[in-house]
Image 1: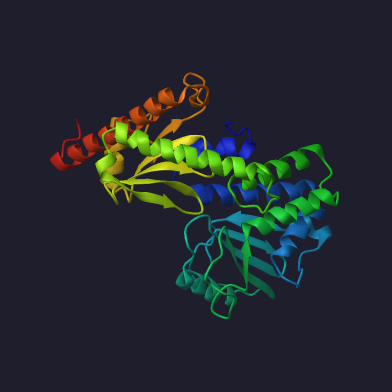
Image 2 (image 1 turned 135 degrees about the horizontal axis):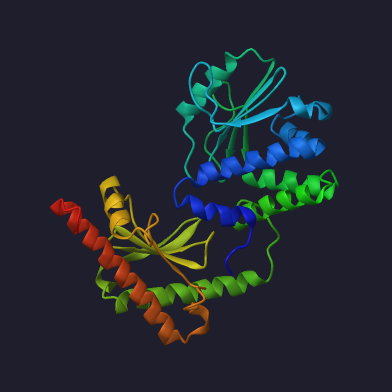
Length: 323
């Protein structure tokens, strides 16, 4: 079912690019709201970024500023900067991309040059990072599931008291859950889900065959966020995202800028970093059909997407912007 979560719905208007920036801005919005309306909860969360020092005071919430993309005086633009009298916290946010040690070292040097008595550089990631805390890197390496736990704790302990505050925090928690950035109890539905995924991949393989692409089909490719097949490996990929399991995606791997421009020009209403088939569309709900009809739907989408990409490639090769 298509998510009705507030943050998930708004994220669709940002396109396939900028997921990291959207996550950052959303989290900062939650922090700012809590600072204005639920300062006790906000201060508790901010202090979680500071280890044992806990420099923020509950009665000074109005003095705390949460900003995004604020340049450091000696260089660098960290994702989040949190300031209060005598306190400066810099947070580098990562969603799927890996952190860069050199960039963090630059932030650390710039932060060390600041005059505040309490200074912290925090790396906040979705996955485990190979970067360790140290004198040339972050003071702290945290994960998004910990943010989810902190928010849960503030709700459970009754520190978020207003209906609007409860709604906003709950929605952001759910957003993290839907994006696979929370550690949750695993239910018996796991077995059914894995079984259905295996069925879908088997059907996807047959759909590629029906789309006359079997000969160019590569091995199954799976990561922590997606699963599917390479086509004309390593040029194209077709599969599903665990975060958005109701979509089948067809994407150009490492799509160059001129190719993106051509695809967006040819298919402005359909290309968004790739082509996608919504499996629960009201006009063609995939799940209510027979397996033969489902196969036809998948094969038709794959063939159409493949042909569109090839058309754009020819246009780029010919230098014809009017194709």
